[in-house]
Length: 241
Image (cartoon, one colour):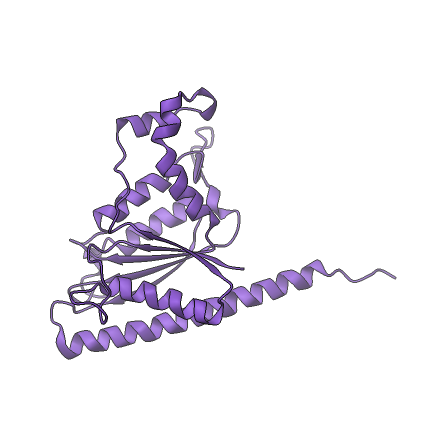
């Protein structure tokens, strides 16, 4: 069974194509998860709307609690980190992380950055060993393969890698850095562009993105099915004679 964690970070509550002024990134995450469950109804999904209900910003008390060894915690420290623990537990349980994130002012929405700051935490998702300065960080979510699917939307065009405005896109590169830092290295990207221009150009971008979402969902299902088949075959050891 595969478990999906779906995050929506858009400030727009509805989905494009269904609700007036709806979100294109929400439409893509809904499509991905819907396609997945239509083929694998037994798989489970945890949904968190960080755009509608943003996580708390970290503050001085959070930092003090997070960097105090657990055995030295005062009661208030556990209370301060309770939200972070919930968000990290959701992430750890996931096999596939699906993030819907519009490009806001060249980066991720503040609500999504708040989620990032809550889940990147020493002792929970990454370890630090100063005795090995050449490689001091150990990602704790590298314990098993996990995939991340980043589904974004942009007002303009040309923000893809290698395109003329790629240097101004700090959404996917930043998220990729964070995810790889904690151990999620299989990251996939799909985006809708041309929201500001609209019309046929936007419609074509939406149609292409939706086709790519369908193909990615099918491809990841095949990848996971093949992996499970290989693992099952390895567990069946031939008898020695």
